[in-house]
Amino acid sequence: MTLCDAHAHLANLSQKMELMPLFDSAKEAGIRAWLSNALSREDLTCYEKLVQIPELNLLYSAGIHPFWHECDLTLEDIAALAERRSIWAIGEIGLDRANKDHEAMSALFVEQLKLAADYSLPAVLHIVGHQQEAYNLLQKYPLKYLMHGYAGHTSPMQNFLKLDIYFTISERIIRADKRELLLLMLRSGRYLFETDITAEYVLPGEQNPLLRLIDLVEECAQISGIPHDELIQVQAQNYEKLTGVRL
Ligand SMILES: [Zn+2]
Image 1 (cartoon, rainbow, N blue to C red):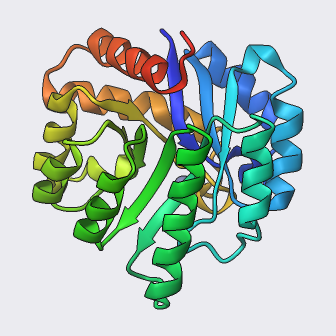
Image 2 (cartoon, rainbow, N blue to C red):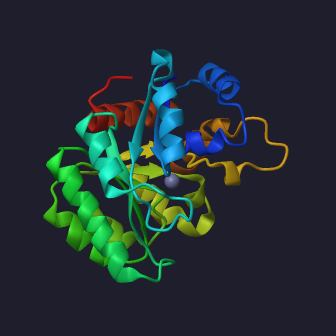
């Protein structure tokens, strides 16, 4: 089994837990690659070390999050990382209805889409609310997109599917009221799986939150009737289409 956790915040998690033992048991369970996101300058230092370990297969992205209090990255930081080809994508970036300074948030999103276009990099998206506005903007930038944690309605999702886009399925849409959305994502064939793990999301007493990915794939197989092996094969193909790397 070769699974990728296609959206995580491992540098952030490292503030709470020692990562190497977590990676060891995740690897044993079949999780062999990571697409992880930087939210702060401190995160970058952590990722610079992690990418030195080739067997981890870790790629990281960086972006100014639309609603994350600890984000201190600047457009200049992201441009410098893109210039050095240190990052695989720009993100997570996007729109979030919890951010009340809508104008500034939209402007920052557009600036980062432009950077992604300038450097021919994919963009990792965080879209909570404002789906129509997001779709209108994304249409102007024909990039490869990885939409993380989407839990909105199915009709905007049909629009997003017109783009060169993939979705990371999270445990948030395993709930019964999100069934139609989950099935639409799975049937589109454009999915990967994510934990979106941060230090904050670790549950009391939880030994290894990276292993949540295994349960998530199992639940998707049970709910959809799509064989487990097929789910894993499709996410590996999508990982390759996005990153150019074969798992
Ligand atoms: Zn995230």
